[in-house]
Image (cartoon, rainbow, N blue to C red; front, side, top):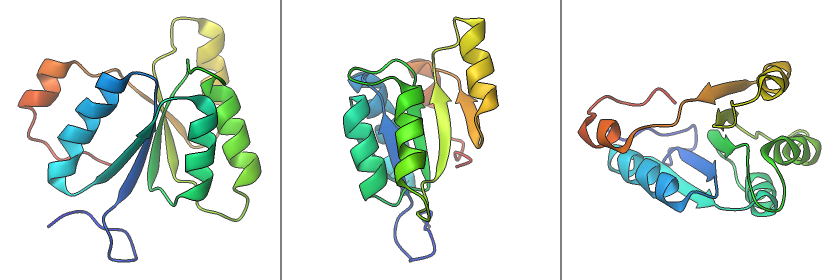
Length: 129
């Protein structure tokens, strides 16, 4: 049985990442399990999509064209008051210690390790979203 949210619809996930292959890989992995995965590839698109949709979770890259992930998150939080914006998962961007500290200082944020394609293709575990 596919995962559903309270409205008896498929659980919606948003990926905000400029890496099109990564977006496709995650979507291809989760879609057969019943998740509805949407992706956008720039910071401004990510803000617009996150505000206009009702997502259970958002996977957010740090380095994005047009606006970095920190600014995207700031805009989402400012514009989504009283609106469910889902859990945020950071992807990448941990090369600098200052970025680690910025991530930790933000609420409801977790780090998502960058997957290796070979591990995802062979995986049969259910994601814990």
